[in-house]
Amino acid sequence: MLSYRHLYHAGNHADVLKHLTLCLMLRHLNAKDKPYCLIDTHAGAGVYELRCAEAQKNLEFQSGVERIADCKALMQSVPEYYEVLHKAYQRSPSCYPGSPYFAASLSRESDKLWFFELHPRDEQSLFEQFRQDPRITVQRRDSLAALKAILPPQPRRGLCFIDPAFEEQNEYYEVLKALKSALKRWNTGIFALWYPVLGRLRDYSKNLRSESRRLNVPLLQLELRVSAQGEDLGMCGSGLLIYNYPFGLEKELSSVLQILKPLLCSRDGLTELNVLVPQP
Ligand code: SAM
Image (cartoon, rainbow, N blue to C red):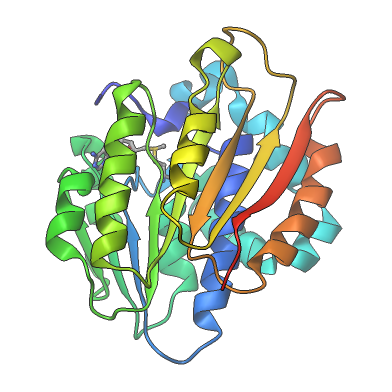
């Protein structure tokens, strides 16, 4: 499990999709004065230096963040994303911010943030970045188990961002199990679960989708496939399932997907947005 290092993938199309979505969800939370909490269950290292050997190995950022860097339409529809990118560039012009960096940058003084990360090096990096920030708790702990202890959170408004590596098949089952129990403890929380779309023989995302639908909470699903799905090849795209999604988020995401499609997808790629369970 701890063999996964996000540094190899930082800034790729999946990061672009999940971080744009995160920015929009934070926009909704920021729209009210009331404080909220943000729980990042699989936080990673916080910020990634793209010049390092790991990121240079497959140059995944070239088919992700590099392709949207100058996109005016996206700058207009999600300016928050670019604000955070530019803030990170002050540290190093060749770095890419991770989900905790987006969350810490876009939340307010009154909000409370929890970052969980199991890998010792990444957890150390998070700790060093955020130790001066009194809003933030960083823990090296299995977040799926930790959710039982910390939910429902204080404040009760908020978002739980779940971004596992899905390196092993049983992770799908474990994540769903944790999510079901988390939704029982915190039935008003927004939960966003990222998932990969792998080759047909290893693609468990449909199952994730059908099981999620059965939870019977408002559910939005979006997907971006940068190429056609093969049989047993690697990741051709990714998506997010958003439980208790904020009102109006589907419209914003739909326009973001429209902008992303020609920039990130080949001719046989696709984007999809579905309200799987509508709001009451
Ligand atoms: N969310 C990050 C971002 O957007 O920048 C990327 C996270 S990466 C896909 C997944 C991370 O989860 C890895 O750094 C891995 O070490 C960590 N991880 C895996 N299982 C975990 C668990 N049960 N609890 C906490 N962290 C875990």
